[in-house]
Each structure stands twice: as structure tokens, then as C-alpha cells.
Length: 299
Image (cartoon, rainbow, N blue to C red; front, side, top):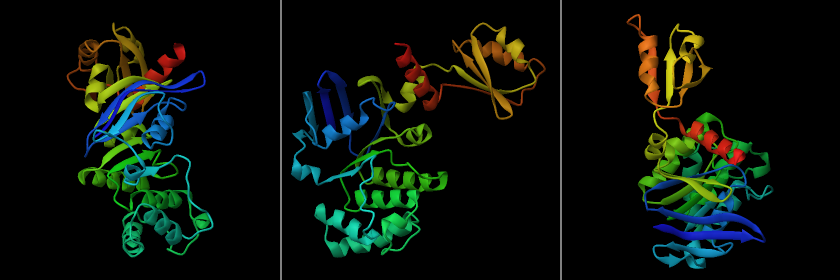
């Protein structure tokens, strides 16, 4: 179990992380989200023991993370750390050996990983010849090949198309099934929503949201309605509780100020006895992220 208790980090007068509390159990995935500069990378660096917290404690199974424990952590940094002029095999085996893996074992596993991630390239190819997406896959292999118990992934989907993003997501889910403790950050809210068991959102170093994904969504109320109807926007706007309306494909998204307004919207669009589409639900994680970010700017 990874546990942060009242962790804060100051750089001079700047408070980068403010009184953060966080618990991640083995076999669980924590999504850590926030705008650039929110404190995510600083949190990762403290977890890795690269920098010390100003106040508070960070423990793994009740113990501070030392160099020996850090060897069991797989870390994918946002700033990629591959050596461009080395071959795929040379550098992945190098990273594996740093974490105590035998070179012969790592070589066998590397071939397996290349197939699973559908890497376009040969083992002797230089990284500088790879596409951005394939280089990202090699970085991920170097992060995971030694079977880490604790995994930190900082923007793992950067440079990947939807197909390759899904491949990587499946590998992260597999890690979870194997019992790894996983924390990852991403601006891909759909990916965060699909993978996360729990969620923590930072804004200017402060924790503004934390809990299960469903719990967070439901806390905002079922204030989103998707409809496909001939009813005009002007008619919808007359309903008390309708905040705004926007086009979504062949339908419209109706944003409410209160969930109860959904009944009036339904009564209106189904007045003729038929409505082709009506779905009232809590806001998506992407919508929640935008709301919280906007609120932070207003503050």
C-alpha cells in the first residue's frame, strides 16, 4: 500500500503540493489529474524519493521508500529518457539490468513485449528511427519489463493513436490484475475514466476532488441530458433549470443547474409519445475537469 499523509512541498515561496493525503492499495489504479503545474510531477518525484517533502510522510507498506525499494518501482516519466543512438535491445536490456533482471531473461521478455505491444521495428533498430508512438512503447517496455510492484506512469498515452492507446490500456489493466499498485496521470480523460479505480484531482497543489470515479461523478448530480428531438432550443430554454444547450452529433447536450429539471425536459420532448433518444446522467470526467479548471481560474 502506498500512503501519503499531509504531504506538502515548497520551492522557495511557491507551494507546489499542499497537504496531500492519498492511499493506493495493491491491485488498484489511482488516476492523478490536474492542469499543467498542478503538482502531479512534483508528487511523482517525492514518491520516487528524488526530492523530499517539506512536511508529511510517504510510505510503502508502512516504510519510507529507500533505494532498495525504489528498484521495485517502474517509472515512465513525461520527459522521455531513451538514448536515441542506442538500439531498442541495448537500452531496454540496460534498464532491466539496473533493476536486477538477468540479461538473458530480459532478452526473452523483450521479444514477447514487442509482439504484445505491436511495436513496428526490429530489436537492432535505433530509437531515433522509430515513430513517436513506437518510441513511447519502447519506453513503456523499459518501465515494465522487470515486473515492478509499484508503477508510476506520467502521461503514458502521449503520441499514441486510439488503437495503440487501447493496447497500452490493456497492459495497464493486466498489471492491475497481477496485483501491482499503479498511479498514473493523463490529460486523456476518457482513458482516466476507463482505467481508474480511484481519482485525485489537484489544482494549484491542492486536492480538490478525491474518491471513487462513480462517487465523484454522482456527487455532481445527474445534470447532463443527451436528446435527439425536434423540440427547439427556445422551448428547452424556457424550462427552469436548463442552463445551456449545445450540439452533439445528430443530437444535443442539455446542461442543467438541477437534476429535477430533467423531468420537465423529458415531458417536453416526449409530448408526442415518442422520443428517439433521451439519456440523463452525471457529467463525464472531462466535463468535471473543465468545470474545476474554470473554477480555479475564477478564484
